[in-house]
Image 1 (cartoon, rainbow, N blue to C red):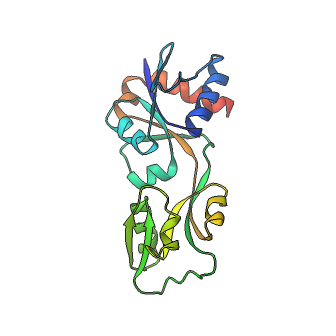
Image 2 (image 1 turned 90 degrees about the vertical axis):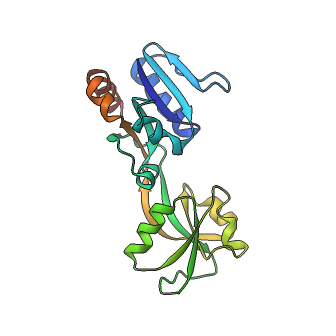
Length: 202
């Protein structure tokens, strides 16, 4: 049995579509269920941020998660394959009538990605105060909570609708197949079989 951790939502659906192509079977979570068993696979539907934790700690053998989450949390896992799904960018956002000035003192940045943000501004040698938020990050500059935001952008529509613009792209992200290091030793044949079959359909 191979246990696979999937982030709920679009990436889970697109991953299951890949598995349907590979194994010629239907892979669908029943309404609100968090576990899906098909033959020798057990899929877990969990929050994106928790996927690396499940895989790193061996609760799942493999997982699918965005590169942005991997770069934010730096889990001790193997990155096996870029699946090319769930594409987005991690961007700096600012109010559309303002200009991004890295020399401005005391910049405040609202984000859920504190580590990526710290690294990015450290490379610019720009000191910033980081405010950690868990959602509705676009709101922060509009009400004076922050000067900037760092957030995931798919199309940029949400930013535009909230009077913001992308000032700079920090990184491109897409979903990766990752593996627990012990599982990769103990279940190497099964995991490499998944890897090979997915690589072939991609």
